[in-house]
Image 1 (cartoon, rainbow, N blue to C red):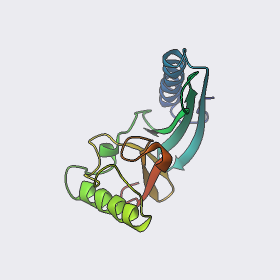
Image 2: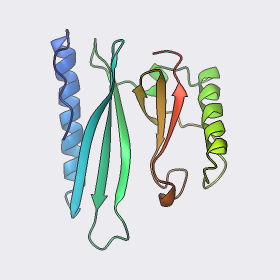
Image 3: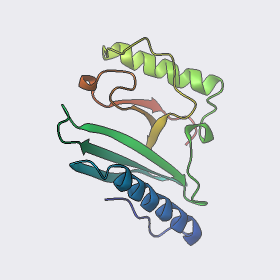
Amino acid sequence: KYPVVSGLANKSAQDKINRFMLQEAQKFMKAEGEAQTAVWDAAVKYNQNGYISFTVTYEIYYEGAAHGLHGIKGYSFETSTGRLLRLRDLYDITGSGRQYINNAIKRQVQENQIELFEPFAGISDNPEYYLIPNYVVIVYNPYEIASFAAGILEFSIPAKHH
């Protein structure tokens, strides 16, 4: 399943988003063609103030594997243009915005006693994220910063700019 946007004022932007999401679904199916099972399921997380944000939850199982792989991928778009937005399009992640996000994640790791592979060094230049009302959610899938047993780590950061 993949999201299809309808009802946008700008039909060109709507078509751009829909084409992009279809291509993402096709890439996933092609890449996971050898898997015994592969599930790709989308959900709208945010649709207001000129932005729409989806998550895609995926599960992949290869025969003989100890366990399946799963994770979340976020997609956020500007509805007026259909432009895919990286976190740096919404936050200044070169300075105080990056520090704000890093501090919030460090605080949540400590409060929730999450065991990481190593101390949290900060977000990458293009972190996985999605939007929800009043928050940006930074996502770390299994094995990125913690063990498979830690699961998908989602850190909700109070939004400043959307």
